[in-house]
Amino acid sequence: MDIIFKSLDNVKVNPGGSLFNTAVSLGRLGVDVSHISFLSDDKASDLLIKFLNDNNVKTEMINRVSDIRTTLALAFLDKDNNAAYTFYKDEILNSDNFINHLDPGTDIIYYGSFFSIDPYINNYFQNILKTCGKSCIKLYDPNFRIPYKDQLPELMGMIEKNFETADIVKASDEDFENIFGVRTGAEAWEKMKEFKVSVLFYTKGDKGSEFYSDQVSFSAEIEKIDVVSTIGAGDTFSAGILYYLDSISGKGIPLNDISINQWQECVRISHEFASQTCQSIDNYLSEQFCNKFIRK
Image: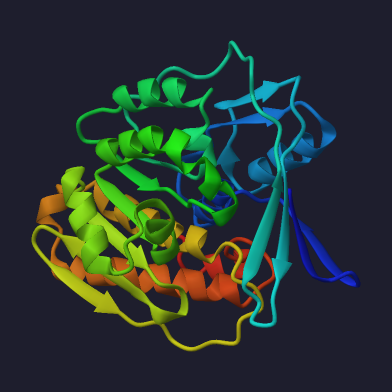
């Protein structure tokens, strides 16, 4: 649960979580999407699961755990409506029901944030990734926040495993600075090539993004907008990537054969999605906005 503070008199509660936000946007866009996670069996998590189901997200792969409480994220918006976070999270110590494989027909798996580097979860998670079919695209977003930076030495091995598994990485300039200490897209791409990543989306907030692959690289600017909240902007950028890849996955196009024009369209859509979220206090695309993108 995200509790968003502009002031003590201006507080909003949103169902949230980075990959949760992406799943909700995809569900509203009509994409066939399932959410994989651990959740508490408390009343707050009942509300989260109902919200997912109400937004066309399948929840059969969510494992309910009795000895944890629903995670809280306090998000404090500054004068520019950028968020700083404080997290209240119980450690998962015991669960026997975590899924151990994906449906063989899975086209894309998107993973990241702290969930994918939780010390308890990571072994389960790496085994899941091994069940992906050869044609399944693996997209990773580290979403590595400042509050976790002091834990980087113990988490680095798991982060590196996730990079090694990924076909595509989408990460912000802050992620790369926090993890590797690099400050440009070109430096970030050099790091990704060490892990044999095929494609990098390097996001820079209101400064746009950069795209890198072995075949091509380019920069894309973003239109200036009046920002209400930046919460969920990166998550809906990811939803844009996934929405576009889903639209061409049935055509069997390998990543290396996607043209520069197609990648540019993918980035354009992703920027449009992120901008729409920034103009709302919600963490995901609005249903009204999604109506024009739903494929009939």
